[in-house]
Image 1 (cartoon, rainbow, N blue to C red):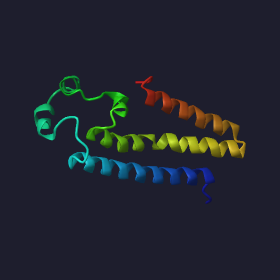
Image 2 (image 1 turned 30 degrees about the horizontal axis):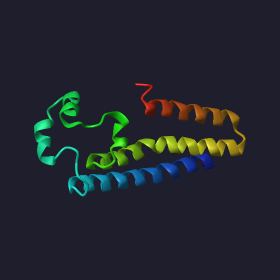
Image 3 (image 1 turned 90 degrees about the vertical axis):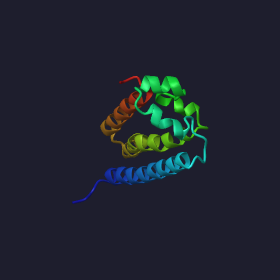
Image 4 (image 1 turned 60 degrees about the vertical axis):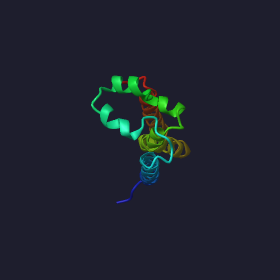
Amino acid sequence: MTVPVEQEEYAHWVEWGTWAGLAALVAGFLAYVLEVVEPLVPHERLPELWHLPVEHYAAQTGAPRGWDWVAQPGWGESLCMVGIALLALVTLACYLRLVVSYLRAGARLRTALALAQVLVLLAAISGLVA
């Protein structure tokens, strides 16, 4: 049984993106835990804050919500979020790659379906769709 080229490309991009995301996640977490970059919330304060609902935690710490962490790259917590964001964006990158492949192959229906999926993912990322 032959595997279509698009499936192989998709699998390759998933593999590459997953390893890149995991590497960024581990590096960011180590930098956060070892305080290579100063954390927004000092580690010694965390036990007193863990029990709080997220709204209270954010109010007491000034922690960013949603994508606001992107505007605060100087904190250790933000480094952890980079890996999570990369992992979350792997599917989007894979579908964008499929769009290119389908366009080159002249597969209009598949291109349209892949583009529709990209739009759905972008809407979800933007927070428009909850």
